[in-house]
Structure formats: C-alpha cells, structure tokens
Image (cartoon, rainbow, N blue to C red):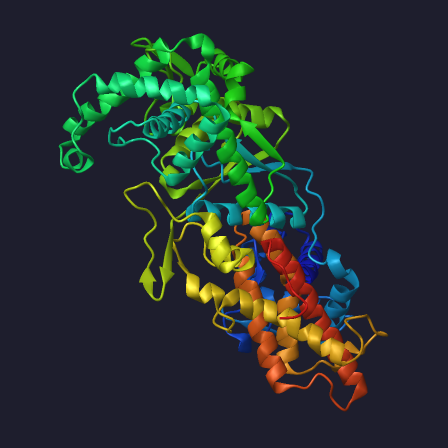
Length: 599
C-alpha cells in the first residue's frame, strides 16, 4: 500500500525535476520523505511529507510544490480517490475501492507466501536463551526464548538467512560449583551433617542428580563417605539459621571452610580417577537434556548448541586474543592482559587474563563472537537479560577490535517477568534455591498462551504474566481472542459448505463498507509489518497487530452478515474472511503459536 504510493510520488518528483532542469538527487528518494498513516482517519488513508522535505531542492514553497506533485501523479488506474493538500506541504490521500479490491485480490493470490520478503543475501545468527547448564530454565528464560524464536521466525519470513544458536556455558567457575553442589548432596546421602553452604546450587534437582549418579557410580558414594569422615574430624559448623545471622565476612569464612575442604578432598582422592570431572559432566549433561526438553515443549529449536569448552580445546581463545594483540588492542600490566576497550567506547579497559593466568568470561565471549563471524555470519544478534546492559558497550568494542563494524552486533535486552495469580504476585524463588520453572508455566497454561503473553510487550519493558488470564477462554485473554477468529471463520466457511476452499473469482469491488475497507487496509499492512519487525528486531508488534485484526473482525461480523441474500456480495465477503483467516494463521505462525480450526 505505502510502496505503491511512494513509487507514484517518486515518479512525480522525477518528472518535475526533469521539467525544472534539476539534476537527480537523493533528496527526492523515499526515505528522505515518508508515506505514513495520518493520526486522524478523517484525513484519508495515507499522508506524505514529500513537498515539505523537497521544497528547498525545487526552490518553491511547500504548499505550491504540493499542488505540482498532485498534478503530476499518475492516477490512470484510478487507485487514488482523492488527494488533498494539508498543512505546510503535506498531501493526504484517500485510496479508492478499486485499489482495496486489487490489494485484497493480490493477498489471496499470494496465499502462504503473503508477507514473505525477498532474500537479503545476509546471514544472521540469533543467539538466545544460553542459560548456564546449572539448573532448569525459569520463567525469565521463557520470555527470552519466546522473543528469540519469534525474532528468528519473523526475520526468516522477511527473507533473511537466519540461524538460531544456543551458547552452552560448560566451562569455568560455574561448572566447578555445579560439581561441588552435587557432591555436597552426595555427602548428605552418605550421612553428612553440615548445613548446605551459600553460593552453591541448592535446588531439589541437585539432590535428584546426586541420587541418580550414586546409583550409576556407587564408588563415588564411597568417596562421599570418606569426605564425611574427614569433615567429622573438625569442629561442627553452626546451624544454618545461626550462619544466616552472621555478618557477610563471617559467612564467607564459614562457607570457605567447606570450599577449602572440597578442593583438598578432590586433590587427595587422586587426579587419575577423574571422578569429579565425571560427576560435573554428568550433572551438566542431564541439566542440558532437561533444558532441551523444555525448549522443545515450548516449540523452540536451536540449529547449533555451541560449547564454551570448545573455545579452549580448539585454541580459539588464544587465536582471537593474538589477533587483537597484533592489532594493538591489548597490553600487559601488573601481570595481567588487558583490552584497550576504553579507546573503543567502553567506560574502562577490561582484563582478559588475570595475573594468576585465569581467563575471564569476557575473553571467552570475544573468542565466541570471533568464531561467529569466522563462520560467515554478516550480523550477530544476542538476546540477553536486562542485567547485562553494562556488557553491551564492551562487547561492541570487542567486535570493533575484531575488525567488524559495531553495527554487525545487535543486542536485545529482555526485562524481568513477574507472575500473578488471583491478583497476587507469585513468589518467584525461595531461600532453598527453588524457583518457578518454565516447565511449570507450560504445564499450567500451555505453550500457545505462554508464547503469546511473553510477546505482548516490548522486550525492554517489564512484563506481568497473569496465569489466570492466560488460561481464561474469554475475549480478555489475547491469545484466545486471536485464535478464536480463525476458528470462527472456519466454522462460517464449513457452514457454507466450502470448508475454506477457494471459489470462483469474486467481485471484490462490492466490499465498500467502512468496516471492510478497514479490514483490507489492516490486512495489506502485514508485509510491511514483517519487514519492520525484522529490521527493528521487535517481533512483539505481531501480537498487537493480530489483536487489532481480531477486534476489527469481531466488529465487522457483529454488523454485517457473511451469508447475505446478495450472492455476489456473499461471495466477496467469504473471500474477505478467507484473507483474514490466512493472515491470522501466518501471523500466529511467526509467533510460534498454533491456529486451531475449532475451539
């Protein structure tokens, strides 16, 4: 719709420029001026500011130039019903019934390809969720998963070559703590009496992992008994409630005893046995399997599960840092290796290798992004939690240091989710380390409601998820409201005896009611919405679009009969609701939500 009018205005400007003897200039091209919907629908269907923006090029008053543009616009197809000058150089356009009929006919002819863009020739990777494999996915991860998957779908629909990826943080400190947490639960199984220390993973799933591993490897349970005996030789630790009342310094000292014991026990038990690595790998593998199962239930699939550990085993971290050193971006100071990130827009320089030789998480992240570009991706999009806001400028600096444009990295930050039931907040976590998991939410409300609700707001806005609303079968539930449109239309078409099958060409010019024009206008905006959502990385606009479409349909259906006495008009209206059914199905598919034929 907008593209058609842009082309007509551009041709009119080119013609006027030729008559004025002006050289072709980019100032006349769409992008410098815009075609958009006016705020007041009484001002027409579309408005353009081309006369205002290009008046200096033509050395004319905007209002006078608007008259010339309108006179020059080719309207031989009679697609424009009315053109009016408004304000300081704006032009308002009212499109004709003939245009709307043609637009609807093209939509129906396109079928499932409606809204599908042409390939952009750019390979894009979207990395999302990437939760540490130290526990089940929680509800916040679910929102990131819905946003990431919908972004992949909308970009693919827009024509991009998209690859979804999950970064498995299977190296470093959190993996050691995971293994130690499971071993502490093994000590409990072996009769250990110490309180469970802070700073470790305390959820019930850790107990389950310990029990399962002990059944498969009873020899490790014997090691746990040995560790319990060693702990019994020292004075008993205070009770958990006593420790909780201590100062932070006292807590660290108390829990430090257990950490030191664990480290000493691992060494004294013989490194050749590899029991701790086996225990840690087992826990990480089982948790990752659970994450994959939860994502599959959520209809989220990643093409690649990339191991952080592989960056070290393949020497990728060293290669990336060597590249940056050769480019002058690294320096040594106080026994540590530093990145001159402040020179590239960060607020300070960053340590990549500590003075004890340990590499930081940032070093691995740099190597991972270098690997992404090395695999041929033109653009990389990372979806992170909002708490990673401060990480964006340093990662942008790293991308630039790797020889890429800062724009080759896009970051979507996802704000927190709060759950509500019966109008009251749902506790998201407890001191025992338990939290509301994604699986629990899916079991209660289903994947359709969860995905749609997660996508009802911009990622950078906090989201209140009403569990009761998500299960309600009323118009107040947005996903039910939209899905019901498709099911209702299928019911209408079945009642007409056609089951949704195509009819002979209808006379779509009979669709002259204001509600019909509003529906066709909204439907034909779908391709532009897909492109905009992909370019702006904002798939949540689809939920608002579909909700508006549902409202327009329900309003129309309440005022006009589809199976009216005029057979030609009835045929045209069936074509209109088939178009609505198509766009509802396509839009929900982009969101990863099913569109049932009956409800």
